[in-house]
Image (cartoon, rainbow, N blue to C red; front, side):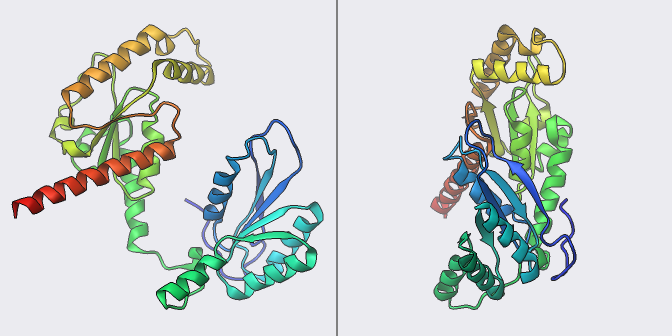
Length: 306
């Protein structure tokens, strides 16, 4: 869980930042200050997504969270100006946004407002006035508690620990070891889905609870042989074990993939997604689209019967 939200104008934590190094092998010294009146998660994700297009920039991202006063913002902007940094900010208070724009102009500082213009456009389009309250200060919603429940369920249902949860899950991921089942489950749980996952072990039949679960909520995960061998060898090194262990041997890995393929073939209704070379975010989107297509197909089928 994150740190508890502070009251507006609260003490020293308001301007605190942490530095994160963007992977780099060449240019050094460029800095990007991400400034937010809440957790900064949205702004940081946007910046990092854009930075993927500049893999060798060498830029450092500094995150400043819960910046809700002019007094907290000023030293950040002044330092950024001195160092020739770029400032990217998400602030909902009109007064604080205006202050940042004005001071940036005076300091000849490059500053990008990620959310201000969008709020303005939405206000016009929706014909409503924004409440201008940082997300960290908003009351907790039913959606928030639903996501917490989903994460707790997913943690308890990781790695096939609770087969009885397959029936209760919104989604069950099935695949051999190191096909990103756990990180995918965690990511999807943060979006409110109760996810269980089951590792396929060579020669071991899936538990009967998997057959009893809703088959249209089960997704198979597969991966290329060579990438999986490399991933497993890297994992063995990480654990301080010999890379010659059966877990990382090509012949063993091939047998496991083939065995998983046989299980998938017995369940033709399961979509099988190849995660080779894919970021977990991309795989998550594919899974969500697959579920959406299934739900729409079921809905259309029901409508045709009426």
